[in-house]
Length: 340
Image (cartoon, rainbow, N blue to C red):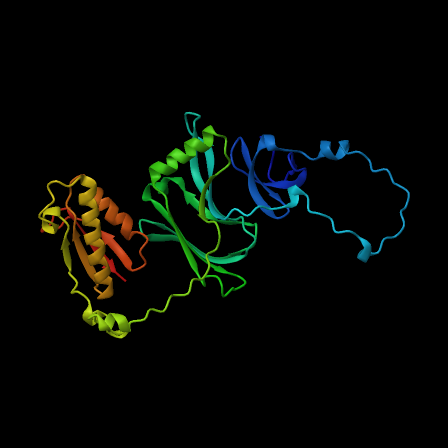
């Protein structure tokens, strides 16, 4: 290995000096430059000694007359000093090792929050596997800064990791939202493809953009209700909403023949859309009525409806847990949802 932890280095394209803080694999190291840590390939860095030795010596020029601060013209920023805003990202950096057959395998994923905007944020970050929290942190990230979050064992990727981050501005602005939550779900197959693509294109990391610009606050329009009342519509007080809702159900059967009589000419996509719309209706009513649980009968089939329902449930804060286990009434064709 050419480098060791603690070695001083120089970044070839910018001539910035730093040091090695971690050996990632036989091609990459983690370096720190001016307090910022990021990965670099070994051909992108070098030891600084030759650079220092080869620098031209500065020849002292004759002293120039003193110039007072008020008379100094403002220097225009050079293009290399101008930082371009490009949103906020979740960045995954795979750490490789060699297996018994000398093939590269991923051991862990290093997770970073990368802020490429000119705004500082407070954030609440939570990472889950199968709706169970694996890691959580509350902190701040400055403008144009990277923040190391944690590591994930690569074998856990099969448990469909999800990432939710609730952002707020460090310097509050009434024109901006008080909070802005982002959600990212990664499917194992897609991640494996991204890793192969990263290796083929010699990329340093896998990136997912969370947002471009922190959203503005949009006040709700006040709606005049009197014309609705005049036309026969019923208006209820917010506190009495549940009294006027459609009754909820504790068991919902999503078999298409239970939902419509005209289903035989429908495509599989149309049938699935009807089933999911029906499920969301009874899911919302269960929450509105504060039900403790809901059983959804989706059948076995090819599993597409069950998979879409489970994907819908995973990020929902109102869902405590859900399970698809054998039931004497439905076999494996139903999922029970427990609410918070």
